[in-house]
Length: 301
Length: 233
Image 1 (tube, rainbow over the protein chains, first blue to last red):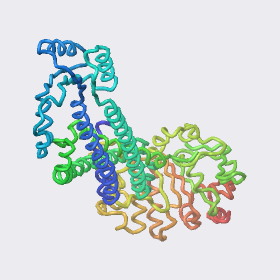
Image 2 (tube, helix red, strand yellow):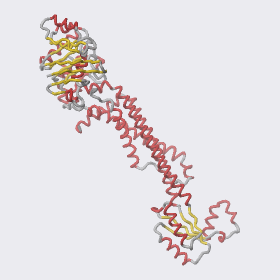
Image 3 (cartoon, one colour):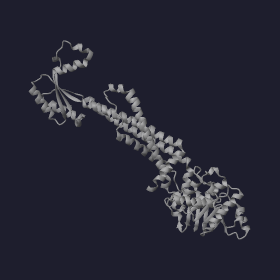
Image 4 (cartoon, each protein chain N blue to C red):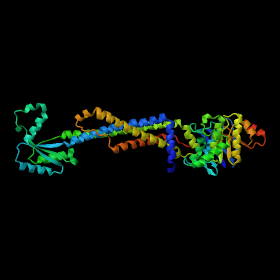
């Protein structure tokens, strides 16, 4: 059978040439469904990266009412850096805090004119290590700091983190659901389109069965045809999504998205691109398989 | 070669298309299957190439009980059969050559062997000059000759023909019958369904006659009157 793969490929290509409109319909269906999926994947990917970068800025701030001398502060920093969840601890003096505040005010910096750094407290900024950026780890560190009576005024984005995690979960769940629905819809449409081509070629299938074609011999060219159409659809989807990425995301919306904190918008990584094309092939193959179930029969019982 | 034992076929309950048919066809025989429309001729042929299964009874073809054949074995049975239909059932988008080559492709024969065999067979039916034409470019008679060539190209043990001359004019009918005769002379067993009395008179052979699904007559027409009798049933 392997030696005859060229024969089946030739027959599949011939079938496609003989029904160009139906072939285009199959390719188009897979392409549109996968392009939508790719577009959604690009969105999820970039939102995930954005939220990950937000997560990086996640920190616990321990405000210090009285600033002890440098030696003591360094001792505290050393203590906190000893926690496994903690990546870095930075001391922000009253002066640095005041300068940051004035800088953030921008044109309104005049509002703090006449005031001194004493109006703001000094603090320790504690950032979590990559592997510990979760609500659970954050709470654990905060509790440990509270027990240590040196730090009582603690500020951390607990509620924000909960929301962020819920949002990411929602994004993943809705992405999977939408992706599953799109793939299923593409599968059904491809199966029906291929069924149409089979109706057109019913005489051919009948003749094949009459001269002794086995089920596999009759089905294989149609399976190859479905897989080829799916692969082609995958490639077109890749092209379409890249075009949308270039024209809409990068050029038109690029500056708008920069405001939200995204510095670069990413396209699908190469592995995802490969998966998209291979996924198209699989959709085509499965679609053909479903369509062929009822068509190749050798007689009633 | 072919044996039927008490074969019944019902498409609907209490309505038998074939009713308790028992018969035997020897290797190398030429048999006409006659009867009015709806008598069960096509059903009997369909049972022989497993397009239908009997409701009751057994069918032996070449010593094998085909009623027990699963779907996977049917293609291999059909590779030893040549099947011809009244409406030719040619692949319209393929050339004459490709249509005749198709059964050999199915069997996985080598390309060189296919070309040689197809050319020889088309020459045998007088269509070697039409091998690059498509079926719709041919007359009805020529299309049926292509169908005959497609059936004969595999050197079948048995040729099953369902009203093969039903759509053809008398002259072309004679051509087709000559092709059948020469295939039969080479040892192919032929079962031909027809209700053309004049054809049976011209080429007298064994007649199996069906009437409302029942075997009404099985006889060798030793005299021309038998053909007329067959036509009356």
